[in-house]
Image (cartoon, rainbow, N blue to C red; front, side):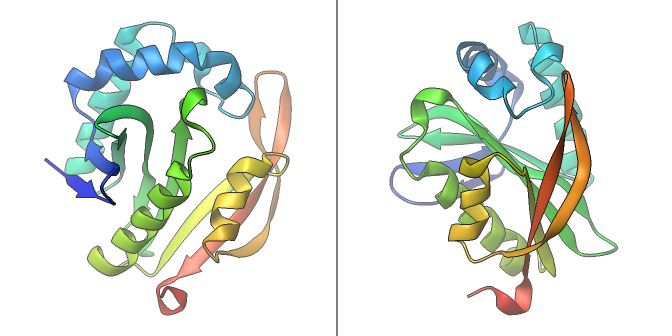
Length: 179
Protein backbone atom coordinates (compact mmCIF):
# COMPACT_ATOMS: atom_id res chain seq x y z
CA UNK A 1 0.00 0.00 0.00
CA UNK A 2 1.22 3.50 -0.88
CA UNK A 3 1.37 5.91 2.06
CA UNK A 4 3.18 9.22 1.73
CA UNK A 5 3.62 11.33 4.86
CA UNK A 6 3.66 15.04 4.00
CA UNK A 7 3.97 16.50 7.49
CA UNK A 8 2.77 15.75 11.02
CA UNK A 9 -0.87 16.51 10.13
CA UNK A 10 -1.08 15.42 6.52
CA UNK A 11 -0.50 12.28 4.46
CA UNK A 12 -1.71 10.52 1.32
CA UNK A 13 -2.68 6.87 1.02
CA UNK A 14 -3.87 4.84 -1.93
CA UNK A 15 -7.64 4.52 -1.95
CA UNK A 16 -8.97 1.24 -0.61
CA UNK A 17 -12.47 -0.25 -0.66
CA UNK A 18 -12.77 0.33 3.08
CA UNK A 19 -12.51 4.09 2.37
CA UNK A 20 -15.61 4.12 0.14
CA UNK A 21 -18.20 5.00 2.79
CA UNK A 22 -16.16 7.90 4.21
CA UNK A 23 -15.36 9.28 0.76
CA UNK A 24 -18.98 8.99 -0.36
CA UNK A 25 -20.18 10.66 2.86
CA UNK A 26 -17.69 13.50 2.39
CA UNK A 27 -18.80 13.85 -1.23
CA UNK A 28 -22.44 13.88 -0.22
CA UNK A 29 -22.13 16.57 2.47
CA UNK A 30 -20.02 18.73 0.12
CA UNK A 31 -22.08 17.94 -2.99
CA UNK A 32 -23.41 21.43 -3.80
CA UNK A 33 -20.04 23.02 -3.05
CA UNK A 34 -18.11 20.52 -5.22
CA UNK A 35 -20.68 20.58 -8.01
CA UNK A 36 -19.65 24.09 -9.04
CA UNK A 37 -16.37 22.78 -10.53
CA UNK A 38 -16.50 18.97 -10.69
CA UNK A 39 -18.47 17.18 -13.43
CA UNK A 40 -19.00 13.80 -11.75
CA UNK A 41 -21.30 14.62 -8.82
CA UNK A 42 -24.51 13.61 -10.60
CA UNK A 43 -22.94 10.21 -11.33
CA UNK A 44 -21.95 9.64 -7.69
CA UNK A 45 -25.26 9.11 -5.94
CA UNK A 46 -24.58 6.02 -3.82
CA UNK A 47 -21.67 4.32 -2.05
CA UNK A 48 -21.47 1.76 -4.85
CA UNK A 49 -20.50 4.55 -7.29
CA UNK A 50 -17.57 5.43 -5.04
CA UNK A 51 -16.60 1.75 -4.81
CA UNK A 52 -16.58 1.56 -8.61
CA UNK A 53 -14.31 4.64 -8.73
CA UNK A 54 -11.91 3.06 -6.23
CA UNK A 55 -11.92 -0.28 -8.07
CA UNK A 56 -11.11 1.37 -11.39
CA UNK A 57 -8.40 3.48 -9.80
CA UNK A 58 -6.81 0.45 -8.14
CA UNK A 59 -6.36 -1.28 -11.50
CA UNK A 60 -4.87 1.85 -13.04
CA UNK A 61 -2.52 2.31 -10.06
CA UNK A 62 -1.17 -1.24 -10.41
CA UNK A 63 -0.56 -0.56 -14.12
CA UNK A 64 1.20 2.75 -13.37
CA UNK A 65 -1.48 4.76 -15.19
CA UNK A 66 -2.80 6.82 -12.27
CA UNK A 67 -2.71 7.32 -8.50
CA UNK A 68 -5.87 7.98 -6.53
CA UNK A 69 -5.11 8.82 -2.91
CA UNK A 70 -7.13 9.66 0.14
CA UNK A 71 -5.98 12.89 1.76
CA UNK A 72 -5.60 12.26 5.48
CA UNK A 73 -5.66 15.33 7.72
CA UNK A 74 -5.07 14.56 11.39
CA UNK A 75 -5.92 10.94 10.62
CA UNK A 76 -9.25 11.64 8.90
CA UNK A 77 -10.04 11.41 5.18
CA UNK A 78 -10.81 14.97 4.04
CA UNK A 79 -10.58 14.66 0.25
CA UNK A 80 -8.97 12.93 -2.69
CA UNK A 81 -5.86 13.87 -4.63
CA UNK A 82 -3.43 12.23 -6.96
CA UNK A 83 -2.58 11.74 -10.58
CA UNK A 84 -5.70 11.51 -12.75
CA UNK A 85 -3.39 9.99 -15.32
CA UNK A 86 0.27 9.28 -15.84
CA UNK A 87 1.57 9.32 -19.39
CA UNK A 88 4.63 7.08 -19.26
CA UNK A 89 5.64 7.74 -22.86
CA UNK A 90 5.79 11.50 -22.30
CA UNK A 91 6.81 11.22 -18.62
CA UNK A 92 3.97 13.51 -17.54
CA UNK A 93 1.56 13.29 -14.60
CA UNK A 94 -1.72 15.18 -14.37
CA UNK A 95 -2.71 16.18 -10.85
CA UNK A 96 -6.34 16.26 -9.79
CA UNK A 97 -7.82 17.00 -6.38
CA UNK A 98 -10.87 17.86 -4.31
CA UNK A 99 -11.39 18.65 -0.67
CA UNK A 100 -14.46 18.51 1.55
CA UNK A 101 -15.94 21.96 2.06
CA UNK A 102 -15.26 22.17 5.79
CA UNK A 103 -11.53 21.57 5.25
CA UNK A 104 -10.94 24.50 2.89
CA UNK A 105 -8.64 27.34 3.91
CA UNK A 106 -6.11 25.30 5.91
CA UNK A 107 -3.43 25.06 3.21
CA UNK A 108 -4.10 21.34 2.84
CA UNK A 109 -4.38 21.22 -0.93
CA UNK A 110 -1.31 23.35 -1.58
CA UNK A 111 0.75 20.96 0.57
CA UNK A 112 -0.80 17.95 -1.19
CA UNK A 113 -0.10 19.35 -4.67
CA UNK A 114 3.47 20.18 -3.65
CA UNK A 115 4.02 16.65 -2.30
CA UNK A 116 2.52 15.06 -5.44
CA UNK A 117 4.67 17.25 -7.68
CA UNK A 118 7.79 16.36 -5.73
CA UNK A 119 6.90 12.65 -5.80
CA UNK A 120 6.30 12.70 -9.57
CA UNK A 121 9.47 14.59 -10.43
CA UNK A 122 11.92 13.10 -7.92
CA UNK A 123 10.63 9.59 -7.11
CA UNK A 124 8.91 8.64 -10.36
CA UNK A 125 11.51 10.56 -12.41
CA UNK A 126 8.87 12.13 -14.63
CA UNK A 127 9.66 15.23 -16.67
CA UNK A 128 6.49 17.24 -16.18
CA UNK A 129 3.51 17.71 -13.91
CA UNK A 130 0.35 19.45 -15.12
CA UNK A 131 -2.54 20.91 -13.20
CA UNK A 132 -5.65 22.06 -15.04
CA UNK A 133 -8.38 24.17 -13.49
CA UNK A 134 -11.46 25.94 -14.74
CA UNK A 135 -10.59 29.51 -15.68
CA UNK A 136 -13.02 30.95 -13.11
CA UNK A 137 -12.03 28.54 -10.33
CA UNK A 138 -9.66 30.95 -8.62
CA UNK A 139 -9.19 28.80 -5.49
CA UNK A 140 -7.99 25.85 -7.54
CA UNK A 141 -5.87 28.00 -9.83
CA UNK A 142 -4.12 29.62 -6.87
CA UNK A 143 -2.56 26.26 -5.92
CA UNK A 144 -0.23 25.81 -8.94
CA UNK A 145 0.40 29.56 -8.93
CA UNK A 146 1.60 29.43 -5.30
CA UNK A 147 3.85 26.49 -6.17
CA UNK A 148 5.53 28.30 -9.05
CA UNK A 149 3.93 26.38 -11.92
CA UNK A 150 3.99 28.18 -15.26
CA UNK A 151 0.70 29.12 -16.86
CA UNK A 152 0.93 27.45 -20.26
CA UNK A 153 -2.35 28.43 -21.84
CA UNK A 154 -6.09 28.07 -21.92
CA UNK A 155 -8.09 25.27 -23.48
CA UNK A 156 -11.39 26.70 -24.63
CA UNK A 157 -14.56 24.87 -23.65
CA UNK A 158 -12.49 22.05 -22.21
CA UNK A 159 -15.14 20.61 -19.92
CA UNK A 160 -18.91 20.27 -19.79
CA UNK A 161 -20.24 21.14 -16.32
CA UNK A 162 -23.88 20.02 -16.24
CA UNK A 163 -25.33 22.85 -18.37
CA UNK A 164 -22.37 24.83 -19.73
CA UNK A 165 -18.78 24.55 -20.90
CA UNK A 166 -15.83 25.94 -18.95
CA UNK A 167 -12.39 26.84 -20.21
CA UNK A 168 -9.39 25.23 -18.52
CA UNK A 169 -6.16 26.98 -17.66
CA UNK A 170 -3.17 24.64 -17.94
CA UNK A 171 -0.24 24.94 -15.55
CA UNK A 172 3.00 23.01 -15.91
CA UNK A 173 6.10 22.30 -13.87
CA UNK A 174 9.17 20.74 -15.49
CA UNK A 175 11.62 18.61 -13.55
CA UNK A 176 14.43 21.07 -14.34
CA UNK A 177 12.39 23.91 -12.80
CA UNK A 178 11.43 22.08 -9.58
CA UNK A 179 13.43 23.00 -6.52
